[in-house]
Image (tube, rainbow, N blue to C red):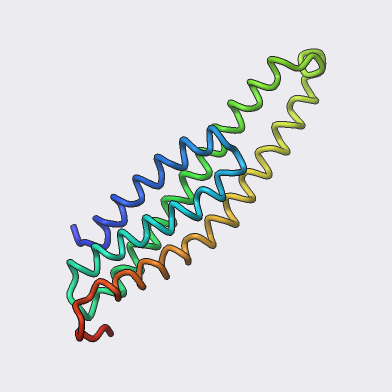
Length: 151
C-alpha cells in the first residue's frame, strides 16, 4: 500500500473515532472539533507521506492523504451526528411530558435536528476536505530535506 493511502487511512481512523465520540456527546459542536482534528491529522499524514515518498511526488501524496482524512471525517461526522441525534432525542423525550402525549411533536423535533446535523456536516465536511488537502501538501513540503526541490 502506498504511503499516501496508508497514512491517510491511519490518520482518518483517528479522526473517525474522535468524531463518532464527539458527535454522540456534543451534537452540532462536533463541527468545531472536526476543524481541529482534521488539521492535526492531515498535517501528520502529509508529514509522514513527505518523509516516505519521492521528492517529486511528496506534495501530491500529502494532498491526497489529507483529502482522504477529510473524506473519512465527512463520513464519520454524518454517522456520529445521526447517532447523537438519536441518543439526544430519546434522552430528551424521556423527560418531556408533551412528547409522550403527542408523537408528532417528537418527530418534528427529530426531523429538524437531523436536518441541521446533516446540512452542517456536509458543509463543514466539504470545506475540511480542501483544508485537509492543503495542510497535507504543506506538511509534505516541509518534511522534504533542506535543499530538495518539490515539483
